[in-house]
Length: 71
Image 1 (cartoon, helix red, strand yellow):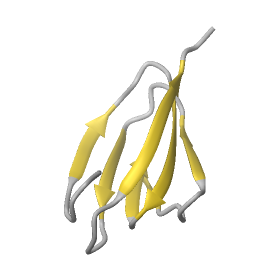
Image 2 (image 1 turned 30 degrees about the horizontal axis):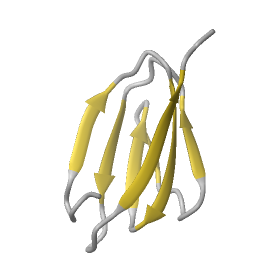
Image 3 (image 1 turned 90 degrees about the horizontal axis):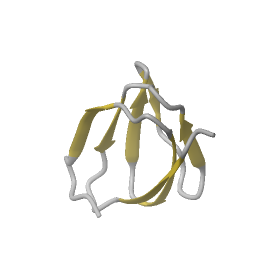
Image 4 (image 1 turned 45 degrees about the vertical axis):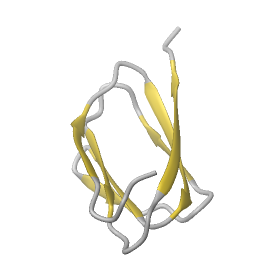
């Protein structure tokens, strides 16, 4: 749960990350490209890709994330 204005900046993971917005307006910056997925739309962030997440709305946002370990 992220309040309005919450930012998670400049992350890189060693495994793929899958995110899903469930509430609010969330902006994902993935390798310099902005994404604004609608509620219920998944976004894949490939392993090793720089990314940031920002609540750009006026309300609390909620988003789910999970990681896939490389074989």
